[in-house]
Length: 314
Image 1 (tube, rainbow, N blue to C red):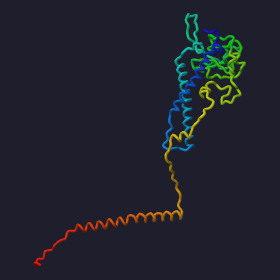
Image 2: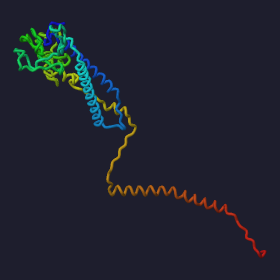
Image 3: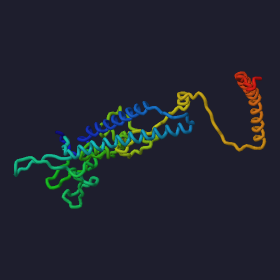
Image 4: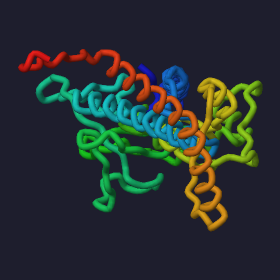
């Protein structure tokens, strides 16, 4: 069991850094898995589409994939947090609940922790002006992380109380009921400052983040916001219309258009029709005449002559 209080960064640092590592790994695994599924899909169209339509469809598919991926990650993370909170699991760091020994009954019982809803103020902990956030109600209670000389949990006050001014406040870092929830509400401001990294014992081999580098995220952006964006600065889409068109490989293309005809066009069509009709009749009429003549000759050849009998004997 550590000698540091739940308000002390030295108690929470390892757990919070492990949480941060897991969040990064989850984001990386989710992106890789969803990209593989996305790339395994085929884009099927009933006919070859234009470049503009192709690019618009690809952009829509990519945006849908991004939205679905981010929504699924947020849902799973919130579900896990809700299960942990509703299960009433006690943190090993005694940050959300702790045991208290009762001298009257000589027994231990569990008391839920709480945190002051304010920054550090060195005043009477029994003051009625204090507002507490209770871990039994929500797991989002937080307080400034720092190096505290001493803090205590009063038998009468439910919150963890800083007894004396802290030796050092870690910029942006928060402690709270659960390392996961407090890490999500924290920022990475300290990681942009070499002096701050030195004070919390980060190796000189670790290079501070560059606050002047172009980024959509500010220095004071919360880890929760970073995680909801999967720690991605920008999504780059690279589509190849030529490969798509070659894959379709249409053997013939046709098109129609509507145009109002003029006098010249009408005369041309009429003459073409007359010329075509003349040609057709010139071929069909001789054949038809020959066929009729043959039919008449055949009919005459098949006629049977009749002999009339003269009743007078002539």
